[in-house]
Amino acid sequence: MPRSDKADAPPPPVDMCAGVPLSCSQPPANSADLVKLPWPLPALRRPLLRPHVLIAGLVGINGLLLVASVLLRVPGAVLVDLFVHGDLSALERIEPHHPPRLLFGLDAIERIDFFHLPRALVGVSLVALACGLAIRARTAWAFSLVILALAAIINFHLNVRLDLTFVLSIVCLALLLWYWREFDRASFAAATLYTLVAAFSLLVYSTFGTLYLGHEFTPAVTDLATAFYFAIVTMTTVGYGDIVPYTTDARLFTASVIVFGISVFATSLTVVIGPLVGGNLRKILAGRFAHVIRRDHFIVAGASPLAINVHHELAKRGQPVTVIITTGVDSPFPEDADVIHGDASDNTVLTHAGIERAKAVLALRADDSENAFIVLAAKEIAPNVRTIASVNDSKHLSKLKRVQPDMIFAPPVVGGELLARTLSGETVDNDTVMRLLFHGDT
Image: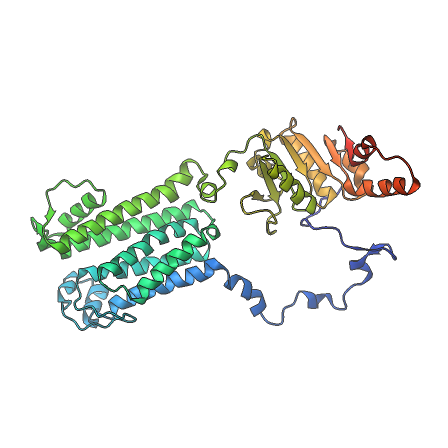
């Protein structure tokens, strides 16, 4: 019995007069025209309108505006010395009363001080996170919530409540919370990378911020080593008390480092340590904790109409169900369904679905040969688990019996005989229906 690579799909409609599939009796004039698009825009329209793409674009724009609002206020010579020549003393040449040049701000800021620099740091972080949001990364979603909240707080502190970046931060926060199910892709490598970048950015911010405000601490911080020490102590919320801020600006800066440190630490626990320990964070966040531990459940292989109805009826009765559908096929099941994408006849996929702890495996694909392979794979891994296979074509019934499933469910086969019995006036009782529907041990 050759194995078919076709995806789950109902058989082609049959011309009742000719007795052959319509797809064969009426071929298109030019089949190439059915797959060739005259213009790429129709193919791009759907992915471009997805919520995660729109949110990623807004977050990236917000980050660019935050960076621009700071860079446009700093003299060009200072930027060259600071970023090209690496001269940290250039920070001292930022004029406290430089004329305000906000890009989109409605409220004028009367002076520039160190508290505008976190806006640039937050902006750069948002641009990087936008890339992760574009690929629906759960890690980028978690960090974006924290960074956007910090951006709104910084703008609120600077009295620019009507600034476009403040409005965008609030809008992006609302969209991220509303479309949180869109960001369901977890990657341990990406989570680790974002965590390291966030921790390094916070360390740079706190170290050079302490050095910049060094004379506002007791004792004064005048060297990089002391600034680094104070940054580590503050980020970890240890607080030995040997260096104390005594001005308002220094205290607010220290408070921001503490908040940033707690946020980065909490987010790191969520997106890195959680998946590393349990591997179930994504399902918990998706509201599917009941499916994290698969035990005493039913495994339904396929996305045919029969599989969809079986899943619906079992779920309605409170039975746990795990569905396996072909990779690349859109899931027709509810969002809260426990769905695995892969080949249901693959031992690795069946093991991931918890076949050894399952009550039964239901091979309900539209292709009878694939159902046979699924039964064979299930018996190889877990011979004690009950197997049920559906038959869509009566000529395959005898062949499917050779793989010896515990039950063969043949709803299309029974239709003709029941109709003939009814038209002939023969008696149709429950035993007859059960015998026709189920071929095997009932």
